[in-house]
Length: 76
Image 1: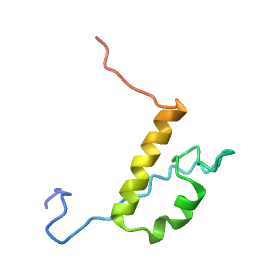
Image 2: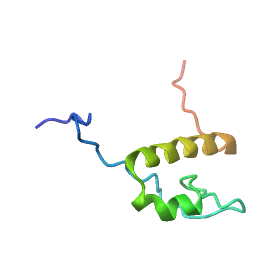
Image 3: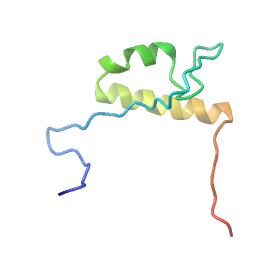
Image 4: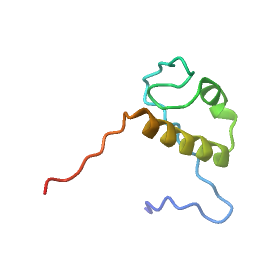
């Protein structure tokens, strides 16, 4: 059985939701668990894979801007 998850020609694997089941929207309508907006959360199931990837990139930016990013570095 192959474990290769690279999409084949013409096949695009579904983009997994970033939901971590911590669904709390802040005053700016950003979820404190996944960093999506309320609108992005409600539209996720109807988005195309490229749209979802764009949202994931925004989520990474929002998470970094929040200061809630944990970086694990190996001991020296």
